[in-house]
Length: 114
Image 1: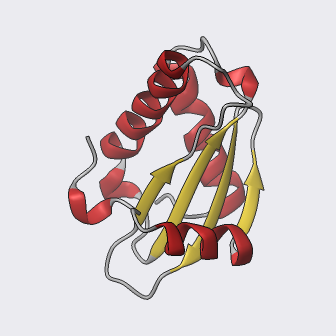
Image 2: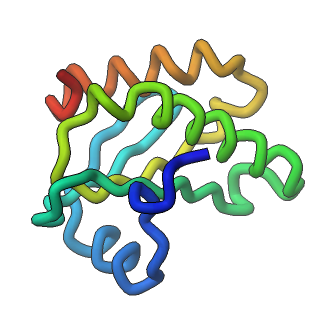
């Protein structure tokens, strides 16, 4: 589980991020990001019912993505709010496959990963 200070929790902040954030697309995931002027980065994972009607599937994706972010937290540049939104293709993928996709998207398109 992500440390509490690294979680993006307030609905207002998430809506602002959706409205004004930069979008980055990968094969399995979409990332929205925006600078936050804080000494740390905060994260949220949003999995809508369009992805799956089953809460078990949506929660599994949330847990997998959160585990990847927590594992690589020290490598991610501070000062950003980030929202992860998996695509339908992410259902049933192993955590290592999601990890590779997230890291590849971070390195290639956002330059947030050191």
